[in-house]
Length: 244
Image (cartoon, rainbow, N blue to C red):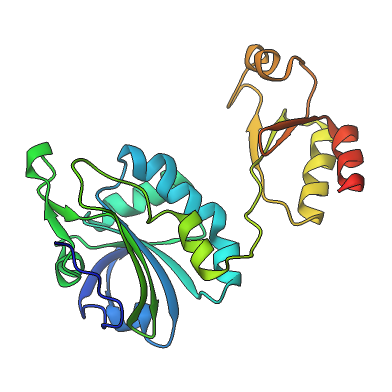
C-alpha cells in the first residue's frame, strides 16, 4: 500500500546534480526550506507518458502554477544527473527544475520506491505529485496502484485545480511560420503583447508545404490555431483578438 504523507516532512537527502562541468550537491533543505514547491516524480526520463504529457504540461502551466503561490516546480526521477540534464534540454522545459534522484533515496524516503525489474528498470519512483510547504507535504496526489503506469491524478491540470480552482488554464496556441515572414513576426508580437504563450512550427524545419495544405488547406503563413480552432493568418488573428 502506497502511503500518503501529507503533514509529514520530506526526506532529508543529498542530490548529486551536474551543473556545467561540475558535480554539485543539493540538499533537501536547499530545495524546500522556506519555500512552497511543487514536485512531480515519475518512473523515468525519456519514457512515453513522461515525455509526451507529464513534463510538457507542467512546463506549459508553470507560470499559472507559480502565480498560485508556488516558488518552484521540480521534476524528479530515479535517473542520474547526465540523463536528467539531457532530458530537460530535449524537452525544452526551461520553466522547471530537474532533480536527479539517482540512487532512489528520496523516493525510498517517501515510501514510493517500487520494483520495475520486470521491464528492466530496476527500482524506480512511483508516479506522484505533491506540494511541499517549508519542507512539509501540504498535498499529495499518488497514482492508483494498478498494473502498468497509471497517469490519472499527478498531472499539471489536477495540480492547478488544487492550487487555484478558478484560474484560467493557459491556452494551446500553435503558429505555423517561415523564416523572414513579416506577418509571422507581427502575429508573434501580438501574442507576446497579449501575454500568450505559443508553440512555433517553422517551415522546412518542423513541417513542409504538404503538411500545411493538409492541416490548414493553405500554403500562406502564418497559420494560427487556438485550442483546436483554426483562426487563420495575421489579419484574422488581429480581428480575433479585438473580439475577445
